[in-house]
Length: 163
Image (spheres, one colour):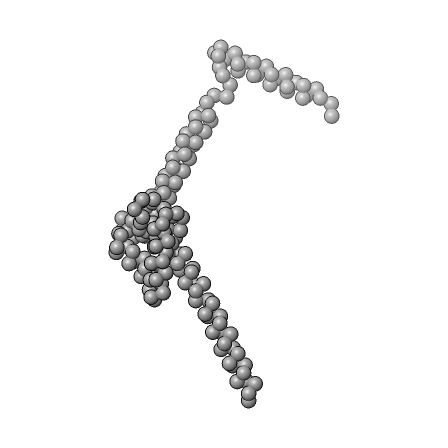
């Protein structure tokens, strides 16, 4: 009876150690996600994403974000807190609703329109080349007469060929 009790106790201790190590790692991942989602709001107005910022404000902001996470706030709650304080300019990417949706759609629409425009231009160039005469007629038919001369000579040579 003592052996199963020891196994249960050992599994509880091991799982406790696992979760005590996993929690800070998870919090660190959320902190990194927050640093990628938010822009730096320093006095220098560096305009960088928080994870890439090199100013002193980054360290203070990182500590503040860690405190918010330790207090139990979720990723979305912390982002909303910063948006309420600084406005939508604190976000590293525009939201996907309302007028901000145009920031997501416009580049793809421009690529499509540009692609169709290039296709139309290329097609018009190809049509011009196809409609151009293949044999230039400079002397009012002398080029056609010369072509007929070479065609008849080729025909004669092929007829005289012994295979």
